[in-house]
Length: 404
Length: 208
Image 1 (cartoon, rainbow over the protein chains, first blue to last red):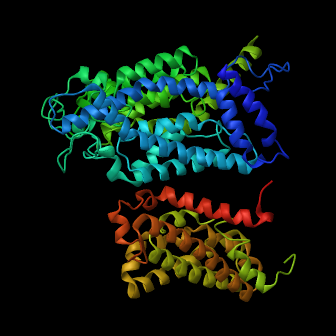
Image 2: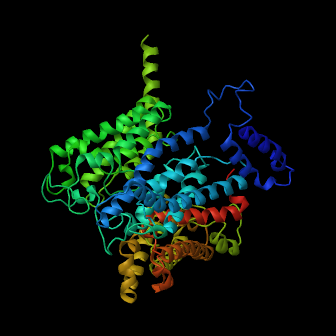
Image 3: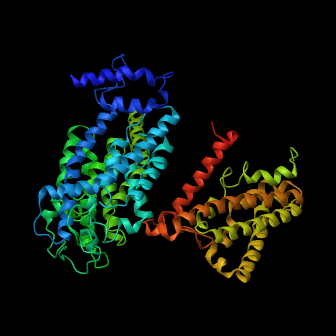
């Protein structure tokens, strides 16, 4: 069996990486690869410990999250190609060419995010003489997915490095970060390089990676649906797709609209959400609460719509279809490290994200999308929410004891 | 005075070991506000040196006659008077800089470093050491201000003292100035990095 042969090989070379071995400088690399491929040999369950409840260690959790992201990723590949073909004025859309184009566009971004992020993680683990923490497995694929498909590589490298160092490592590494690492990388890009992260020139891939794909006319521009809504002058004006036609709600649901690489498709986000909830990784309460918050705030804004804030004309359900709110609800808000942990706290935390995201969208015309900022804000509040929930609980029980 | 500190230490300690920004964590607000460009940061630093040195001397001279229960008011009056003088001088001889610094020169009055030094040093020491303490702390503050402004102007605007440093070829190759460096949050991160570097070199400053 090849599988056991690999395992045997790993076990055989193991002594080289232990203290005193000739390759001990690379022990973190060895640990990282070995536990990536196989569940660790030493588990407290085997020695009678109680900390591990089942076979899920954090690496396997991460892999399920990456799997849940795959529908969005594949849809992102297709949509990137589809938008490019549209922009080039094509009338035929060969499926595999679109996929290949999307793949070639995003591949360098994913590679850069992983190389930079994992490089820093390996270096820090080596320096602190700790095991490699695997949190970056998910972050590395999330970052390219929540940015425009053609984000310049060096910008992505700078943002990932900043985020991993200042949001994760200085707080103590995976599991100790206060803010969502992938979102901070995006926020960094958004504020540091606004010309490459917002406006109407960045959302459709116009380049020809490795010389593949049809050419797009120079100076091509197309705003995202939310970007168009933010400058509308009358209610229910149609949202224009590339090439003149209007964008139907069905297209928005499928994700065939301009936007960040992996977050346009509400359908694929739903599939990913089902996987995460079924695997017990994401909290369904947070997802439901985000949706509820967005619907509630969307309804309030819709009821009080004025031409000053055109995004308020969107119906509450549309708020969920456009932009990155659905993606944020399923993949960002539910990050177990940065979310609230108490049951009541999860409801408050999720509701806050949904409501704040819509508030930013509607009442700040400068920011057509607010999901990123809403999640980061709620991340900061999560410990406070938990603290209040726990205090309230203690007080209620104390009162019960006293009155009894 | 409980222990006699040499004038040398009074003057040089605030540069690094007892830096008002890095170690006492005072005056952070103005470090965030005026460090977008080097020129205003330097002007701000010089203004603080002047105000700090002279207010220290004046309070030190008056220290035995100031009634304890209104000492803060007296200190504020002295500082405010000096700040007005500095502000008028800047407006007269460096109008552009004073416009860039706008309200922050007036806000030197509320700079924690001033009250901190007046309370902690000038009220208990003779004028000459107080003068040295004021200049020393002012320089310590200026060093941080200028180093933060150096990174923020270089990375945020690609210039130093207004002169273009990042070559045009780099921009042509796709380099873009980092807009976040212009915003206050990055000043905090830069200060944090400077503190990080300083602590890693000074073992006795590291918290357990």
